[in-house]
Length: 186
Image (cartoon, rainbow, N blue to C red):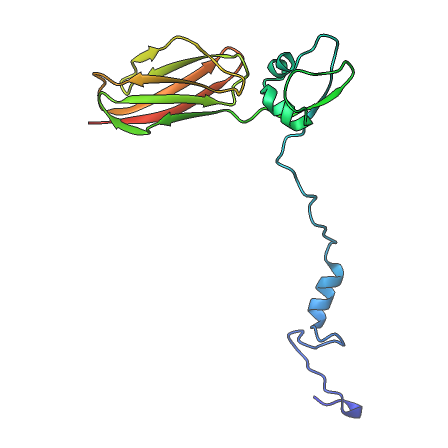
């Protein structure tokens, strides 16, 4: 339809265009849409902890208290090695590394030796390894102490063990609890 003055008017379906070139429906929707903002960025890193050195403190004692290695505290504070701390000095304590249990190799045959390594345990934590056989039988080894880097390893020979999937459970006396598996092939 042509209106007076040569203006073309389209009727129906709301397809008429406005000065911006968008349909009236699109402009109306844009005008009535709620305002949006981008979400605030999130951080997946754990913040460091500040610690003020007290008389008699050593880097080793502080590291053990926080469950991190003295090397990690040294690096976080550019201390240059050694236990040279000053009373009142403020140290940044990095977060403990995430705990993990690695079984190497993941698959093997009877008679092989498997190595179990825990990382991220608390310094000095006593870790006990338990092997759970496919039929439910268990073998529990003696405790092993995590070193300054929070790691501890042990090995297990599979003499006479049946084929199947074995669970390895590492439990610490200061809260570490990890599980991994290996397969003994027939």
